[in-house]
Amino acid sequence: MSTDGAAAAAGGQIFVFTSVGYGHLFPSIELSHHLSSRNYSTTLVLPSNLLPSLPPSFHRNPLLRAASISPFRFGPPSPERDRANHQAGLDLSAHLEAHRPLCAVVDFHLDWTKPILDKFNVPVVSFFTFGACAAAMEWGAWKADVGNLNPSEARSIPGLPEEMCVTYLDLKRQRDGGPTPGHRPPWVQSIEGSVGLMFNTCADLEAPFCRYLAHQIGLPVWEVGPLLSKQYWETPSGSLLLDGEVRRVKRGTNCTDEGVIQWLDSKPRGSVLYVSFGSETGPTMEDYPKLAGALEDSTRPFIWAIQPRAGLPEFIGREKPSASGSGGSEGLGYFPHDLASKVGDRGLIISGWAPQLLILNHLSTGGFLSHCGWNSTVEAIGRGVPILAWPIRGDQIYNAKLVVNHLKIGYMALGVNSLDVVQKNIQEAIESLMGDRDLHQRANRIRAKFECGFPASSGASLDAFMDFINVEAAKS
Image (cartoon, rainbow, N blue to C red; front, side, top):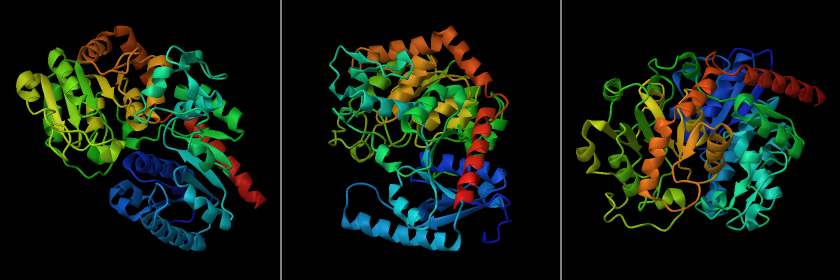
């Protein structure tokens, strides 16, 4: 078995396939590190345009290598998509000819790889970079046919915690209006033919949802996360955790690490609300000013990180809104140009990339207003930072329910009885989150479970996965 100069591994070789976007890439990198630590030669298969984002630690590991393929496309069939995916498939076939692995751990978005892997008789494990709760709720909502809920109804899902019952508002918070009657989650077809499912989570956070999926789908389920960096797990809360040492990203920003640290150091412990919706989602252009008004009227110190293009229609699939009167400009997204002068040193407004790990790990940070993307959610939970949830789409809706209803370490930013974004409601939610001592204590109790680093239960689950794959390999 050739590994292109990598040290021979007693365990054999495993391919890990990542989809596009940092939310998929970073967990796949960390999964590759965990597999190589068990003496398996691990190949991360990724589109060539993501190669510059691999951290130096990846290249220093003799049991890791990157196999690049041509960038691929998603969406409806088109000549451009078909050409791109055909070339990516040829590249993948060439890698498999040279290195047939024991198995392939494949991001479920990449179902186009299944026929190629089947051709080479490679067992496939479907990899979910988000949590088990979202997948369980999507499956359960499908089986309970929640698409026909009426506005006053809440529907329990047999086998899942009662507090996770699906409401009409859960569905309508989705920007596409939520599932229609009989709607099947898109990933159900993608996992067909898989030998097991792997989730970026741990039993401490999502055990009931993992058990539910294993029972419902009839496949082994392995919790192997949260797949955060070694530096994250080894850095104590309150110590300096620099994002640049953890992951490589294309940075465009008006801030420096030193400036953020200096600002945070000037604020009382637990006083700062961090506001960020990630790089691909955000409120509508009409709702951004309401959030700005709530932050202005609040007395709490805050950091607001705004991605200039987040919330524009190329990300959210909506008709392009007018930027007039919103503080934004055509094609650039929203920025509250007058907010900084109104709040003074009480607020720090970051345009572009923000050092999120640094902020969440600082003792002055006491709350996180978030879209509840899974990586951001677990980064905050692991540091004991309560979450003010403003979900936008997809798994974020159920991640928010997990935080608010099941773990009870957060509030909904928009209230629970209305879809309308009201400035006063946001302000009240900020005060509730930052002032709830019991909530903060619950968040710290969960944080304490991770003080020893990467969860032991996830390590055991990774070992169980390896045992399973070795048995599967012996059959072939």
